[in-house]
Length: 186
Image (cartoon, rainbow, N blue to C red; front, side):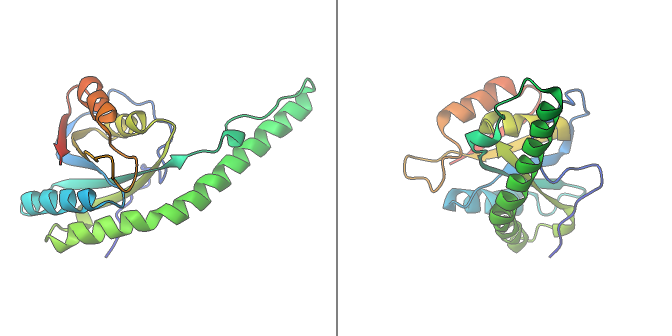
């Protein structure tokens, strides 16, 4: 089992601003978590698309929110100290992303294994992590930056394993992600 990553694709997609990329019908972004509904979505999509040539899938998992203390530093009137505090904050944020990513990355590996069990070719799968400042925004940023033609999400009921996709998030994706098909799987 391999993970396809290219040099122009960041491991984390925290903030992306490219909005005018070409949208491809043969690229699909599947937002995954560790729920049974995600497993069923992977089985459905993999079975449906496994025989379509040149279909590329990105499995995308959104990390938990960054702790408040890592969002900004207290500041200083001394410009030199301000620079030092800013640099330390960036280092602390990078370390948090590295550690949190290492903890959550197995969710992507398991999702890729599930997709592979359907017969979908794993050399057409990319794994990516984003971090939550807002789940819908994270998914939309990745969808726009990656030029995905389709975004696949699941709707979780109140007993879902993770708080990933409530109706508010899905409503925003459908409303604000123009030009992209949004598949909502139950």
